[in-house]
Image 1 (cartoon, rainbow, N blue to C red):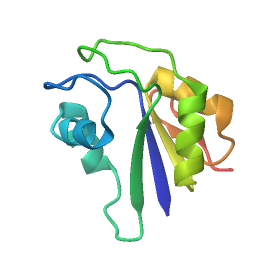
Image 2 (spheres, rainbow, N blue to C red; image 1 turned 90 degrees about the horizontal axis):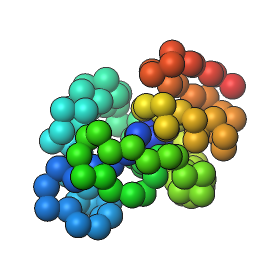
Image 3 (cartoon, one colour; image 1 turned 45 degrees about the vertical axis):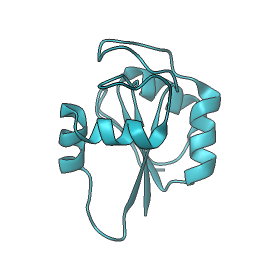
Image 4 (cartoon, rainbow, N blue to C red; image 1 turned 180 degrees about the vertical axis):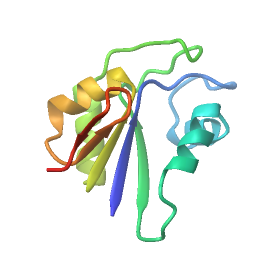
Length: 115
């Protein structure tokens, strides 16, 4: 099973000047949100978790907000071809609802769609 986690917005936790997925993922994994999410997600070898953001822009701090970018999320959906999507945050939920009709979990609003 493939899970695509769509996060609200990336922000600069360290000396990140431009978007670099590998570097950002390492920073995210050490953040409070990243640690909480890693506990909540399944760790079975049959489950592959992929991450993307609602927008590729990098904010200066956790309060940075960018509107979701449809093309960015569509590219991630096409690349990953997930079985289920987890949308974390209102911006992520809004953009995912525009482009994904499959199984979806949105903890922010409590939405859970299984079709």
